[in-house]
Length: 176
Ligand SMILES: [Zn+2]
Image (cartoon, rainbow, N blue to C red; front, top):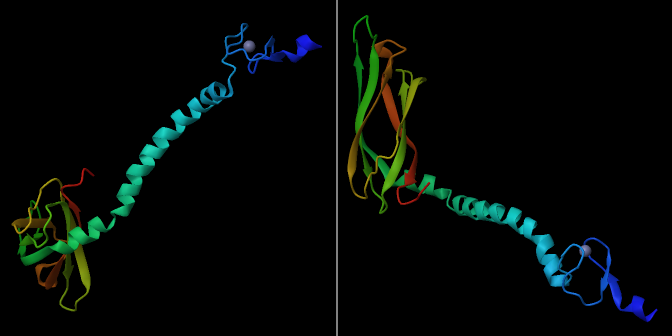
């Protein structure tokens, strides 16, 4: 009886072992609660760590979504002119807009997405073309020229007016 009181079972293989033994002599598993929990939790911690890491990155991204809107608002279309060109039968007519943008903010901007909308004499939207200027950085206070062109789907007289919109722009200091 006294003997059985001094013995316990291994937490892993369930073989009888000396009470208070640090390691099981049969399977060499550590017997202390802290060591057992550490061993049990390790795979979970290894699994959770990348999830937390990715979560922190995403949280940083989601905390800064206004970057796109704020960055866009700092860009102003200084001027723009539309050109309709009858390039001949080979390429067909083209419609293009040439203009300049200015960064009125205090941070450098990149990945500027420009959209040009074309309207007929009645003011109806008849055509649109988008363009993203990847990686080109627009420093604060500076102006860049742009040209957005596409195949014209209507006759020249239908392109009565146009509007240039900055759809998005990114903070060039961000890694994303
Ligand atoms: Zn054991």
